Image 1 (tube, rainbow, N blue to C red):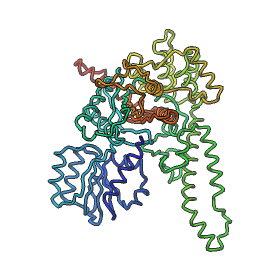
Image 2: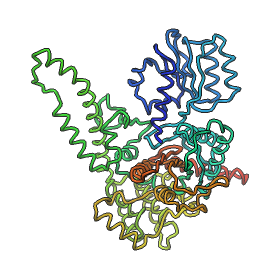
Image 3: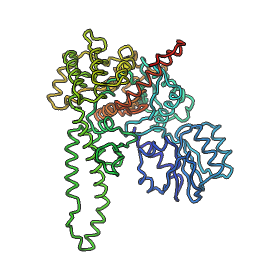
Image 4: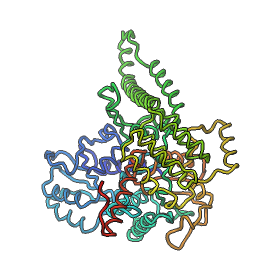
Length: 569
């Protein structure tokens, strides 16, 4: 159950099938992202692929000495572009691969366009998703909901993405969905429909325990995407933003030209692969060790290259040294920028209060701490709003709620009306009336004692007390305790044995904190393999945008049904 490997194998197979000779890879906007996340350009160059082009690019030259490998999503637009391409082919031969199921009528239209008989092969290779980590995938979709319903164009795309993951992993699963979410049920039914319609594709060798697809809704846990993070990958996404493994560092003070955009990929960067899930303190130490190691290997300025063998040794080691130099400067820059932001925005203090809001049950202490931070001029607008949102979700119906007072504090702090309004939107999106789970349990003495002992062992610290709801849900699922009344099965049959292969999908987006929880479950639960996916991978900014789109579209739809006009402000 490795999504990165699945996509890599598809791409290798495409290139292999085309045989020896120079090749061009023709893609669309989405398949470009799908490929770039699992392969570097230099890796593909080694396989005789010398050009990368978009199918919709108008000014491509005729290059009859090249073979074309086309990797495209099966959209109407792509099929139309391909028909035009085949009528006036620019390359000697075409190997066409669609990332999902394509209809017979579209295949027929392509065959009719191929008058010069340049098409050697048309196949379906199910890489219709972004493989972020081996156990984490995304569909890069935002604004998926209108209120509590699917945005009409997004449901079919999500269904395609999810069924392609199942086909890539060769799984025909039983489906369980979150009962409190109509969107989860709709998606489950839509996936089931495809499995039934394309039953030949899903005819995999039966396993003793069938795989399980678990569909969840982000609105059941709006707390996790609002928290600051302290492990490397999650922190980079939260503070700098990871987009298809790329970080934009152009705003970093005094950044050099070659570091304005850097790629962080566990596939090609050993330091990143080893530090992905470590906390910020450990990364600082590891960066120091990396630097020291680099200094030792660095060619001395006064090193004499007297003999031919000295020169040969230097040249042989140079590529390795150059690669290491790139890795060092990249991570030193990234970690340096994270450190700067942590101290500039007082994130340790902010995070401590966030964790208290998410995990403890002491209203008076939480109220004082949130108020204290809102009055601190160094706390940013985003962090101030995030604290008030967490307070609003946590103490929504508390008899002594000071939410109104906190909203006034935000106003005094000069927080924009757009951000202040988001507090109400957040409660509408993920408040008590929406949730189907016990996201917030008043902590009993036993839980607090457990916390205390955990602290004594030094396993947990004050910044990472929070456990995402998804982890608790999976824990119950694996132990056979997940209630059918909360997560019913789609269809009559149910699983009697402990599940072994689990694909979890979060409508509205997953997070790197949840990916870390899945990574740890995979490590500690022998015999259980879990893959996590989401319509996207959120940080706080993208999550607030998602909530704004969801709640805004829902309100507009309700107004439309009532035949009135929304308030114009």
